[in-house]
Image (tube, rainbow, N blue to C red; front, side, top):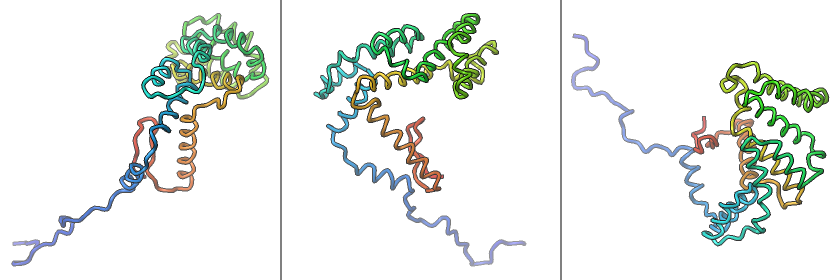
Length: 242
């Protein structure tokens, strides 16, 4: 009879031996992060800075009461920026432009690219409402000349007008233009410009700046092929290095 082992002989199974596994890079990384102690006052300041910079007045007022944290400015000054942001997020772009012109008459004249993005968003809203003739007329009267002057503007304009080629633009390759996040992107760009016009200490929140620094650092590490636990901003999770 064929046998895999001789009589009286045992088979060694190293893989079954009990061994202490080495901690993963992610585990070591998390241990170091957990050892970091950030003062609550510093976290509160970071949160309040974000709420004020982004114009979340109600949340800032509640946080001021609950955490006893000063916003560093009169929160009523946020009202105009909130009205402008809400108009954009509701798709009322012309109302937002009118409000900006009342508050800062030179702002859009001095930032033509910002003006283009606002006009582009208005064009998107017309397409969303299936007002095809109005959309084409608006593009011809307000955007066509800008497209001839700037190749980048022309490419963005072409992507926007391409929505008209689809019966259901929501499922087209350019559907990202119709997403709420695109409105938010335009609103954030305008909010930053208003803060600069009002000579604010910063046109962006400290939290947003920190996140961009982290993204840049990860890109640099990836470029240099360094193995490290990667933070996925979409899932807010720490991933093992690949």
